[in-house]
Image (cartoon, rainbow, N blue to C red; front, side, top):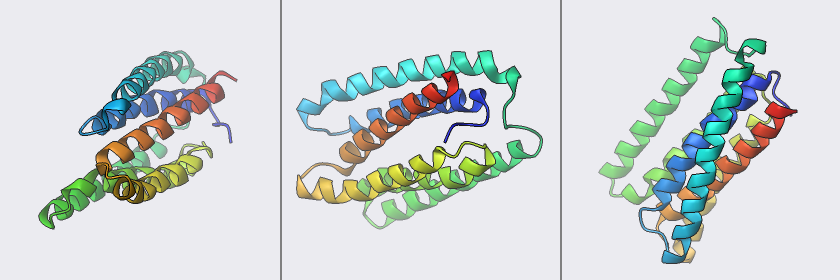
Length: 176
């Protein structure tokens, strides 16, 4: 499940770290008070992962990576499709009075976009996060309803934790 190149795993560490900060931040919209310190710790750990991943990426990029003239544009198209799907779904949810489900939709799309990235980047472990993040998104709705929580708190904390775990796993791949 290791990345073909250390630089790709290190870049995943950095990217997952950055987006872990975003998701832990989104969870801060209206979480239970007792969650706030944990969300802050998640944000700090995600920041550390982003910084360490960035440093390791910079140090290993010239040793080889899977981003080239062919994969770079395909990566861009995958991300563009992801952004369009996120925006269209968010607009539709807002127009239909389901604004609270926007973070759930975005987590679902974000997770699913890892499926085509795994083979493209030669990093099969991304397929694990392609299952985990959408699963977190789907389960978060039931958990939020069951415990009278906001979906943003549940999906933000869950996705943040998933990306932080993915960041740590990717860092191990990058360093070994």
